[in-house]
Image (tube, rainbow, N blue to C red; front, side, top):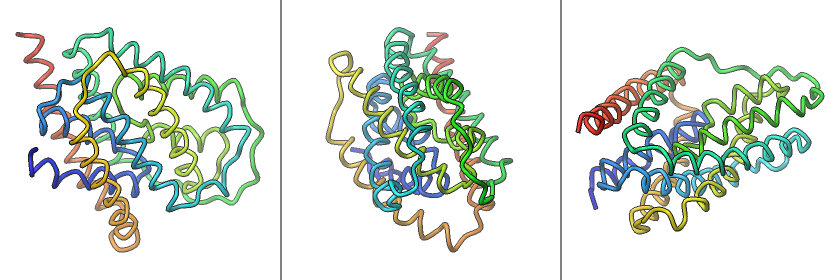
Amino acid sequence: MSMLALMMAPLIGIMLALFGAGGGMLTVPLLNHGFDMPLKSAVAASLWIVAAVSLVALIRERAWYQLQMKLLVFFIAGGAIGSWLGAHLGLLVSDAFQGAIFGLLVWFVAWWMRYRKKTPSLDLPVQPCRCLVTLLTGLLLGIVTGMLGVGGGFMMVPALLWLGISDYKIAVNHSLVLIIINAIIAGTTYFGHVEMAWQPVLWIAGLAAVGTVFGSIFMHRIASTHLQSIFSLFLLLIGAVMLSGAVGAFIG
């Protein structure tokens, strides 16, 4: 196993703890390039790592006390279908196409992290559930999860705020629940279709879980804007690596 790749694994948990997003953005390239794992195997393995780390973060936050169940049920329903569909799409498309989409998505997230502003707690009353919109939103984000091996929290949190959750932290906690369920469904769909080495998966999941502890500490000691700038630049580099690999595969 690559020691450098293992040293980078805690960044997955740090990003998840700080921003409620970004774990899969690091996990897939780490497995693909750091451990020479085929892309589809890296996507499948990433889903289990993201699910495990999100579960650790969920338990630390005791998020189940803050959940809006009606909205969550419709989001889960859409996400479950989307994750299953996304996993099948991921198996159908070429590695080059999958890698190119992943790289472009990472660049988008880098831009989003650099320029977004964290929505403050507004202390507004709970909004009525826009159930059909919630179902369709969950479906689209589930497809992203299943196809690319990312949790989708970078889109989930703004979507949840838009759908009526007025507090940023509560939206992050909802996204953790959704990420766990979507990732497990998509990860199960990949079973039997790709080979996966479990040893690096367990190592990365453990180190990333430790990273969530440091992420919680950094959240209170370092300005989030500085961290967002650092991670956005890091993601730009990751996106470039994934895109260059995809272009090489297309040319080859």
